[in-house]
Image (cartoon, rainbow, N blue to C red; front, side, top):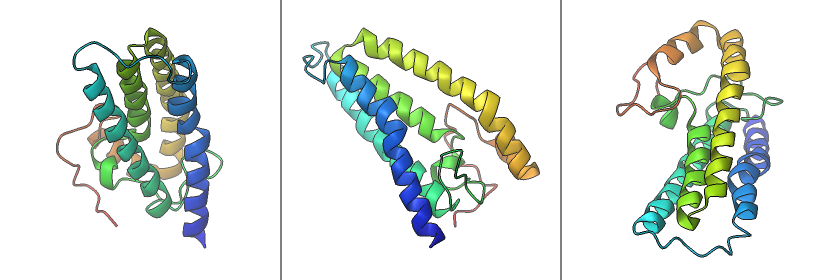
Length: 169
């Protein structure tokens, strides 16, 4: 039953947080995607790759929270275990990186300066939240395990080779 609750909670949080930040807001800023697609060569394919690739990473990261951590990304229903498998072997904050990549992809697709500005504000908010809340909270909750993980896995720019300090469940 715990796994089902974690999956349901993560799905709701996926809609509530990334759905609004990377979906609803860019949609509104591009006049509900009525803005013509970019005419700048290369912007549309690069934007598409960013949106689709980052969406896949985001879904993978959410699944890891539910299945490996038995919890959700929501602070009100945290994981029981520190999530360090899958994409988390490459970067500590794959959800934030994915959301920002989706926003950037949409900015490229629609050549939207408004979406770029919004992405910068979203990035500043995410970085601040991680530094001021998440990292201290994870440090208190998981102690030495998190300290080792934090020293070996970068927060924002993925490492090319996976960290081998943890095993995938």
